[in-house]
Length: 262
Image (cartoon, rainbow, N blue to C red; front, side, top):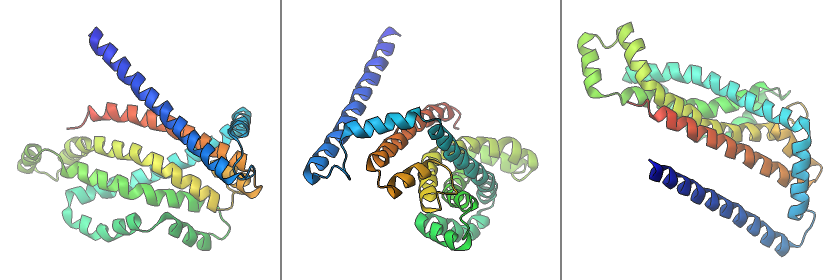
């Protein structure tokens, strides 16, 4: 037991050191680019960038903006989850339905996100919060839908055979066996889509009118609009920190959920 704990600590330390090395390489590449271009306005030195980052971290408004972005992303994903889980479950149970929905799912997967945003900018000319929710919904929906459908289709054949003998489409079979067995796949897909959805959310916040749309995108846009490049880089580092924290939490939750897979 002691050897396993020590091995785990050594592995964790190695991974931590490799991550630090990766960060050092990124900073080194930035320094090389900064020196090569010799433009202190577009490429300020790292001292100014990190000083601005600390100013952002000391500002309570920053945490409000982060909360708005994360909250809006979660709301859009929950809406996606509701519709994707219902339609994915129906498609998993009735194969013909999956063929009907296939063009719609393919459309959501293949069209670039900016195309959705430009269309919504025309429809919602007042640039309200609704189009941002729609954009994030369009990203999360196909991921959760396919995982729900796949989770049901991947249930053990012996279980499905038993249910077929007893009545596969009976309410007890569906709600007490089939849907619960597929849930781990759905939750994992929900967590996996969260990081992507946040990136799309921030992109939408920047492209839609940031004067009326609060969030991390407003910080990025204001830095760009005012040509405050050290704040722009600081906001990028802030976003990277947020993603690192979220990725760590998602990885931890995925490990827990994998124990419930069948």
